[in-house]
Length: 434
Image (cartoon, rainbow, N blue to C red; front, top):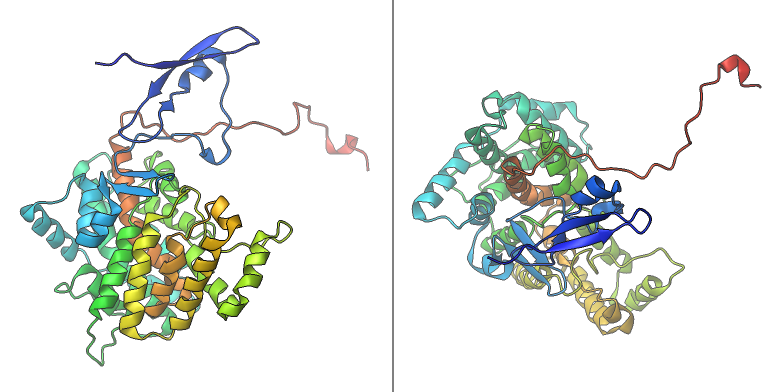
């Protein structure tokens, strides 16, 4: 057994030292356990955005931003995208391993049993305006699920946690489709459990009761790929929100609603919608140089949406996979958005040959192409982030489940650097002057 390594931090003012254990995971950089700094030296650390802070141990997802590598439970995303399906990836993220045949049949059957949404929940939709944003509806309805499922709200009981996980994964497509149907004034469609997970969602979105509906297999595959690529992404803002909410003991429906609310922020879940707006603004490949020049101008706040990533300093591995899916889908559908895709390809080519972008490693990310796929599938812009939430739901739940059995888990309570007024005494109103 290797000797335990420590990093000694010495305060030059007091001369006191703190021995901080050096923790090493399966992959990635070692992490300094800084808890001893507060105990021994009386200091806290300051890290806005927690960009250099590890808040938990996790065995779910690993990202190497320098290599452009993404692993789900150790499996490269490229292999899962090519050979797996979304529900199998759900099982993997939730339980740690790919299912055997019996486990797969049981899990698949469990999801199918819970696809229906209580009619009382559907009546909530009538309280929203016809033009209500679907993400606003989704936040409210997912949070309200806790009022219908009292049989699975004790977070201390593993069976309750697992049942809530199944319900959330099964019902999110039904709720998402209902939000869309409400916005266009069409009757809600019920799930058809003989269909696959993605096929079922598409028929609830686009089928009408008066006509038969058969999903395009290429469209099904493209959306399946989208869901797999967005299923989890380590400790991002929404995942951290789910963990923080869960640390208080909140029920899982409330925690996932908190994650959805965070994802709704344009800096997190709205990037693929922003890419569509960008491509529409460009309008013609001949206009690309002007937009490139604006992106390079330090005095212009304009940014090329879909380029660069907070974590990936190389190609986003998801972007490479989804780019081909975009080609396949548009070729098969002969979609009206072919010109938009042409602009995207030309923008990518020009940007990647430009020294400014190459030096800064501003490569296309997954959002660059995902918006074009969703647009080609007929998904309206205001539903883009809803689809993101539907895909990421399993990642949030897996992280929540992991947190619930973590012996180190404590209620989240970040420290602060106080910069307000110093202590002062209250002065009665009559003595404060005019």
